Image 1 (cartoon, rainbow, N blue to C red):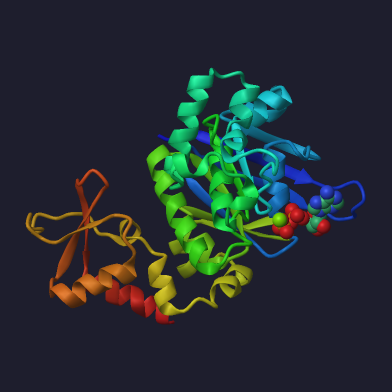
Image 2 (cartoon, rainbow, N blue to C red):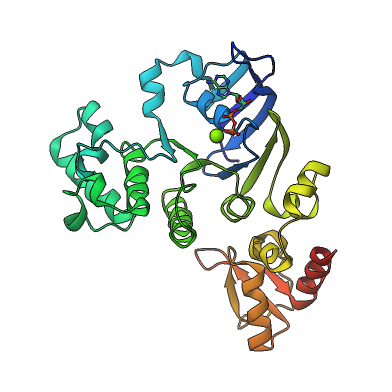
Length: 322
Ligand SMILES: Nc1ncnc2c1ncn2[C@@H]1O[C@H](COP(=O)(O)OP(=O)(O)O)[C@@H](O)[C@H]1O
Ligand SMILES: [Mg+2]
């Protein structure tokens, strides 16, 4: 069983100058290694939810556990160093170059110079900015998308156990944003970080999240897989929020692994194989091009784990069409 990275137990937050609760009796557990998106309209409590985890805001009541321990038990600075934090406004230090920005926390932790240099190279490579071209540049010499990549590298510098990301791609144009989303999925798969990613964009939330937390008025309306959010919305609010997405968009956010059937003895070895994370829109094109009855679904290490039939895809399309 996977470890629980973060557990909210009846957490509430009321700001001093406010009548209402910004967060109201929220309970949720976040598994280690999962990519959780938090979706909701402005003022629904998303930012407050994140900021309580790294203790920028203290709770009014309830508890937050970090790998089983109450976050209040840790010294504040130690606690924050275990958590990467990326925000929309990026917040790179303008007078420091890329290398110095990324090295901020390792420097505070007094890492050896050589280790820091290696880490900077590793991270710049990870976010696809060649170190030799970028490490001496200043933030003003970078595009918005490049700055956000450096922001991500900086947040990951000291290898935090979890990453909090608050609308990190909110101010970035649509195409760059798609690229950054793909990079982030790749990075998460490679490093297996626990990520909490806030957005008000329905598509972004469904595409990125293994699970999605839908917030409204300081309460969790549904915490579920993208598939269940789309096809089994917990209430009217969720149903309305996701109903604006069209059929192809919906097929795009459903991954093969979430709808596959178990393997059976009739499944042939030589059948066409697809990765478990491929989306249904993609799979539909295989059926149309290859004229096959079923596809074998395999994991990243190429182990066959299930199958998908054309019949199933038709059922899903009908469900979506409703
Ligand atoms: N520092 C603060 N002081 C007072 N009220 C706040 C503060 N931060 C947020 N709030 C209030 O808490 C509620 C939730 O805000 P927030 O978590 O920022 O929502 P979101 O990130 O979903 O837009 C809002 O009503 C907001 O006005
Ligand atoms: Mg916010």
